[in-house]
Image (cartoon, rainbow, N blue to C red):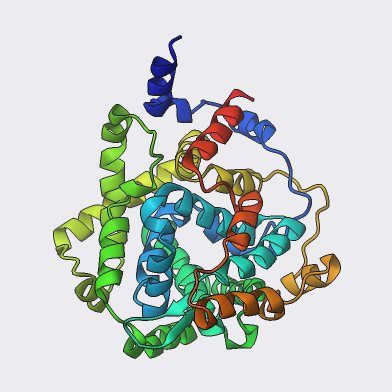
Length: 390
């Protein structure tokens, strides 16, 4: 086959190439068991909520858009440029990390969290909105990201999924949220542990939020959700999946409270809200019952996250059926607590940016590829192709 023809076929990969129909047993045989159950395990509320299909598009997209109302985070995202020039891999890598946090085995997750501190050490600089500096490793910034994620995942589970948790389940969910905070630079004692405390936390943040031009631009870019699709997806594939993408996008917008809609400039009426809720409820209920639909979407958007989450979703027993806390894992495997990790490296990054006026080193970002996935879209799709052929 001529080289140009082969390249053209590669760049117009049809939608069907992302799906191979299997029985549930076939899917179970497709994935390898995890080494252990990580930090939650079977019976945890985190696995119940984060494992429901509403989490990895609706909940995740809600979280990452609302996060941009923190001007420090918006400045960090704009400075890195990753969302704009590689949106598919940025989405997939972030989902990969969150999948590790929720479902991953203890050692690779603790290692990924350690590397993430180095990645975030690159996200430092001057915030043009506040006139202050920003640092992605700052505990208050990490707590904002953490709480918007856990709150959004639960909110979408309740709105578009099975409905509210029991009071006992909800208490356990927020306790598990606090446990997972040990993977970040957050002081776990600052994590809200009830719905009322979470609402108070989010309300306390409102005076600090800013719908800057940068934030609005990023939300305009992300909210249509088509940017998360593989860049080599064929035109026919994009047309075929566009009704689902539209439905998901409207579903995310339907979750925003009035003040956030106003800040984002989102104008979506009650009729569209109601339609989005109905359509998304039915769609996600069907996806929950169909492993093929579920893994089709996960493989399309974030194949690395699928490899991590699938064993838990399918009930594949771990090699060693134990759980531990992140602090126990950090001690066992020799990792520092995130707040204290890599002080020399972080100091060098600080000196480069604030002392010398240079760009930060990409060392941590490059190292992260073996833990969160490749940054290059072509490499990601080659991994998908090899997996599909296995």
